[in-house]
Amino acid sequence: MVTSFQAFRSTFHGNWGNSIQGEDHGALSRSSRVRVVSPRPVRVQPVMKNVNEGKGVFAPAVVIVRNLIGKKRFNQIRGKAIAVHSQVITEFCKSIGADGKQRQGLIRLAKKNGEMLGFLA
Image (cartoon, rainbow, N blue to C red; front, top):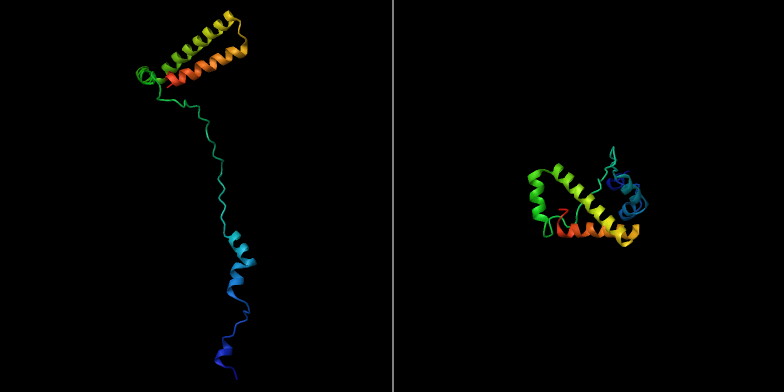
């Protein structure tokens, strides 16, 4: 004769803590992770930006002139001015007998000063 208790007997002979936190837990958690693969890698464009943009004594004047004549024309004029200034530095270095390394240092110094004063805003 089968009692009602024996009809509901289970074949499980462990405890729930071992089955959830044991060896099977790692396999279950790894299988539930979803990996998303994008079709193309996202490329970040390099940004060459003046760290002192908007700062400096001459920055407001530079911004006003750029807005009046337009960015394209402004960049052309600024490029010519930078080229002329580099030529002046080169001629100065020739006159005092400075070598190419010193000339490059002076040009870098001029760029740094131009940024700080706001000419490259």
